[in-house]
Amino acid sequence: MKLSTRFIAEHSSRFVQLKAPGVDSPEAQRDPAVAATVSTMLREIETGGMDAVRRYAVSLDNDHSTGNFELDARTLAKAGDSLAPELRAAIDLGSARTQQFAHLQREHLTDFEAELVPGLVTGQRYIPVGSVGAYLPAGRFPLTASAFMSVGVAKVAGVPTVIGCTPPQPGGGPNAAVAYAAAVSNIDQLFVLGGVQALAAMAFGLLGPAPVDMLVGAGNAFVAEAKRQLFGAVAIDLLAGPSEVAVIADDTANAELVAADLLGQAEHGPNSPAALVTTSERLGREVIAAVERQLLTLSTSAICGPAWRDYGSVILVATREDAVIVMDELAPEHLEVQTVEDAWYHDALKNYGSLFIGEWSTVAYSDKGMAGTNHTLPTAGGARHSAGLSASRFLKPLTYQRIAREATLELAPAVAVISASEGMTAHEATATMRMERLEAELASAS
Picture 1: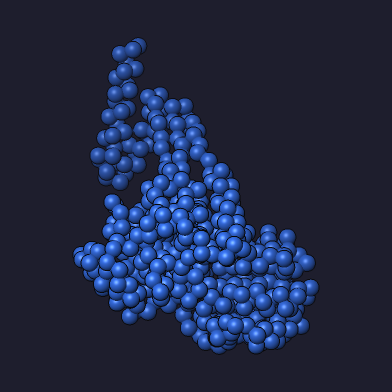
Picture 2: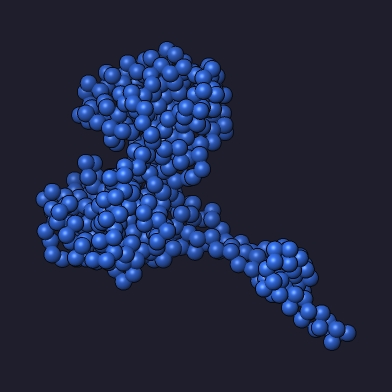
């Protein structure tokens, strides 16, 4: 999430950077060493099967179990027993609310059928993919709500089989909150297996009777690269990089809240970008000061601090129109709007993963599943052309046509002409044979 050199050159009169990022590096950069390592792992697992998976589980996760990595149904059902009651209740709420929103999405994806001309009936049906493999990260921060967004939404979409993998914890076994979130999201099977080996095992059919049709879920650079290389053999949700947040705020915004929301996403990692675009120089400078104050007391300042220093920015613009132009160029994963003209911005903005309108809306509400919307969203400018994960992503919009005899003269002559012009005589014949047959039938009937 950064302004391109081209954009800066063309629009330099529209903005002033009160704080620029401390580093100038490519976004979502592919590390050749990571790509090479992942290629080797995938090749070895594809040929070596579960023996190769187990070797990597030992070497990378220090997992010396000799089983099939599956968390048995009884253990999965009891995953929430060790959780504090308030945490368990919060997970239940987040799962239910995310599924509620996914149900609304699914209800608005409707099958249809229409007759374009007499005898030509066309239609579309939404059919769920057959199986999904969800990666549920549990590294530095266990992302409890990931199961809501991937497993729960896939099941609402009607996917018959959803399996998941989550890395083992240092003491062995899964993170209890992540496992419970998967259970209440109606996962079919959960395996305690992490990293590239987990995605490969799901994609190559090593954890069930067949390979999964789709891989979803966030992860580190190796997980992202594995999804990139497996794409084609399976579908994927998207290739997400470091989490991003941007805020549009005017003179009425609260600097402390804006600063807190910027740091809330910077907490994801030391390379997580956070940007403020503001029409108020006073607010911009107050937010910069507020960020520095809040960093003094945050327990995760060792993460947030470098992220803000190296990837944080505050951009001053003169008008709301300039704010939109700049923000649409940034195309952030998460975008908050805290102004007196929130409705105008809602109508004007086009490029973002998910929009949070008003000072009472914070990204964390979606991150943890309480807003109901999905937190798996495009990063690194991907919001210019793609949307985030939703019920629709697990559905295939399959088209069909049912063509009657009487529609032949509406279709065949033009198809014959186009096919002949292309030199595709076999295509031409499929149309001309039907015309000839129809003409013969009409002649015999008269």
